[in-house]
Image 1 (tube, rainbow, N blue to C red):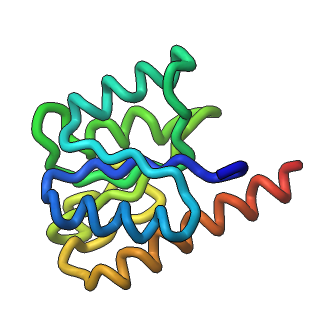
Image 2 (image 1 turned 90 degrees about the vertical axis):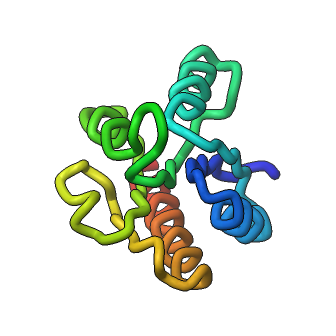
Length: 132
């Protein structure tokens, strides 16, 4: 999987998390699935220490247990080393103002969620190519 992007999916709904992961893996991405904000914080600490692959995109529920996706997005989407975030919410207004590149309604069909996430990943790849 040389050149594969690492995508973190942080979602409490087991079925949604695993279905999105399966589709993104089929696209050739490395996917790490996490259940809550605490697990996300732990993973990011490992990534900073070089003990886990650094994510290129984080897809997180707005209302995670522990530390919310909205709170983490506010911190990590700012500055030079900002991490791109997609927030999943019951309504798009829930994620407004958090700094996410997209806020997606969780009630979208799985195929539509996948298409939106894939679009963001393609945009990130285009930005990297342009910057190089």
